[in-house]
Image 1: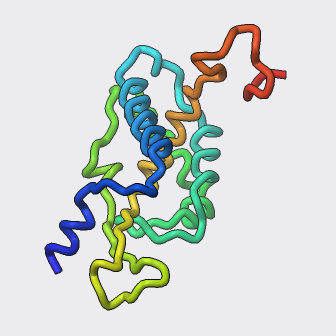
Image 2 (image 1 turned 180 degrees about the vertical axis):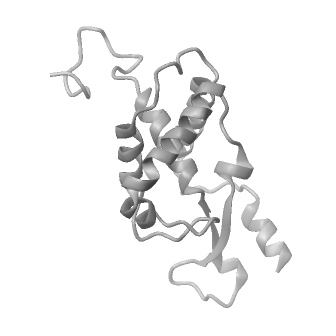
Length: 165
């Protein structure tokens, strides 16, 4: 059984895996790290940004390792938003992003593959449910510093670009 979970945690080459998605995730992670350690992270985080990030959480998913579900954060948004705003502002002011132990660790769960026998361990895949507070923080950072123009886009061409008419 131990070997099964070690295998689930070990990255493998998957021909059907979407490399574009992996590249986007890696880019987002590097952006968060760069933004929080740069002087561009001077603008205070707003209550609106925190609340919009909470609203983006997917409902109907498993609880994270702290036993928090998206629905809980969304239902108590008026109460929790000021607390999260204060926490995130402390992170911004100190240019500190909590690492794996706080925001990016999760619960690894073995899930049977669709249409396969659940009795055989090789017919399972691993999913990790990460901290919802970490997800909210990431949404806040990425949304507040999202570029409005593609790097390869001409200054004269902004049709269909968010924030432009």
